Image (cartoon, rainbow, N blue to C red):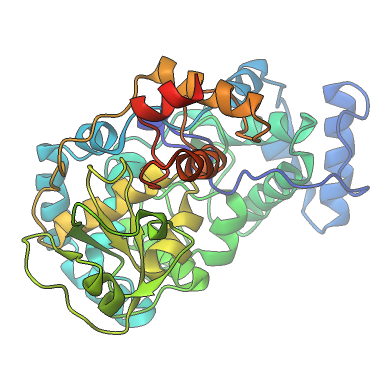
Length: 399
């Protein structure tokens, strides 16, 4: 879900995942216009009318700027505190609270139907498009055609291009109305066309699914999508906690779950320092800035749903934390004053890990899952706290 206001900071759509090429979607068969002619024939074979095909694809051109921006994408090199502090401004908190009141009836109906609470949806709404204020102005059809013609994710964007044509065919939007971010998303919650088709809800009852202008439609559609990912009604998604100075730090991992009772035994307390509710609800301990930074228990609604909405831990954690603030939580504690390594030094860590045979992905200064796994392995080897967060001590050992 590429956001206009986050273009320089956030990776492309969570749905824009690399998929294997198949015979049904070959890239670059001839120049762009001959390729587009073949797309038109395929659309007609799928039952899409000539009227829709003409309105959507006549005059569509290849846009090299879209490919350039797609190639240049990256997730964040900022720490969680830097990014969340930037994105969850006082104005966004006030606007979010106002939107919750303004659309209270819609949020109540959506929660009854799908189980997703208003603060969760409102936080995504704010981060994705500033509550519908910034939907993007690029031609969605041009972006999708360009990305489908490109050879890296042909299968994915072929599907999205045909889905966009079907949206027009159903009368939800016209080709002219299909404008959004450069990567082909649509609407106030930034859906790709296939999700528009599969999860779009006519919540306002006007007979159309309009995710651009209708906030009720957009919010209900997001909730329907989250329910499909496994959202559990009446369960938490994220809880800020305090950690003791000594505990088995290697247990802090998004892929490791324990009951809250077990976390309590290890000395975890709630954000105000009170005893943690010692029940059997499973959660992962997330330390986005290591053992001395902020700490959260992340429940199934986070690990199964938020991280599918956006695979970036920093973005997903920010969205979930924003939702807790809208639900009444206090501002996050900085912990014991953890400081992240500068961007250049994180790249040094990645290079040194790569030299030792670790697959850290790109040397990009970004702490992705591969980099964190390698850091964790070397922390264990060097007898350092195993919290998967690179420190100056680790960098010195690696050197």
